[in-house]
Length: 368
Image (tube, rainbow, N blue to C red):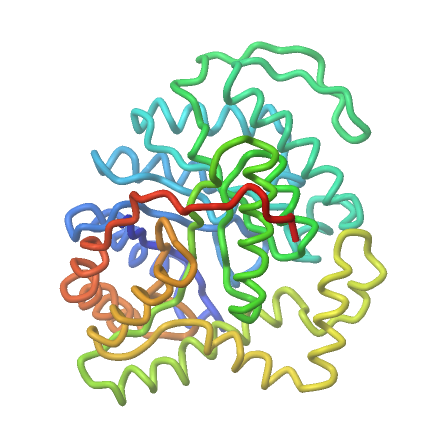
């Protein structure tokens, strides 16, 4: 199976200079190919030290010039924040620079401070995402951008250079709410699972998505991409400490950045799911929720980590992983050791897993 490296460029509490953060994680990215990984990914974020990743296609173009084989992906490109013509042009160019190695991950965004910074109302994100996604995905196939919608009024323009090759099978979308999951099936794109929900709910969402995808597109859905934070060490007690300190620090930063406990989400069109999440957090406590998020991740000895990830592949029929090793307030030397130990002792076992067989989906079953 394919296993990729995810990078956050996080600088919590500004303990290092931004130059030091970039120098360290760029070196990790450049080394990815030699260590046997199959791809490099990073998310799009703006304005804070949570993730300092404002221009993902530019970063991936740099990595394209340093590598020959690995795929180059986004976790994710937030469509409502940018002009669709620019988005399509950026990924067509990335495909040219990398000779067809680009993977487009898309999403509609959740960070309130980022929507405010771009002067885009959060309540418009679902409508903007739908229109922008339809326009961008069509342009990536045809080389022409044209759309007449509520939010996007785009006169016909031809994109040059023309698309390097089809992006079908190379587009994945992050989706949390059931409505978003169903939308991705209709858009003919794969799912990217960034763990925020109980695994039984993820399984339900995947089943619903697969059934609807088959109904809409007449073929099985692409296997999902799963993003996971990993803490691996030869000493299980040290791995546990990495979970307790650094994975937990990351989940706290995620809850703070996204304001998961903000009940006002219930009042924003398209974010009702997060309003319900905020109610649940108010009932059980933010500390418990952050612990739940941490427990969705993977830690242990190399054998334990390999077994846990293999079990996830079996349970969810995963096509590929995006694995993160430097996060929270983890010292850089620890992050590097985490990354290298995984590459030596876990990665070979995962790459031996055959994920090529298509999942059998029964057509007669009702869509959930």
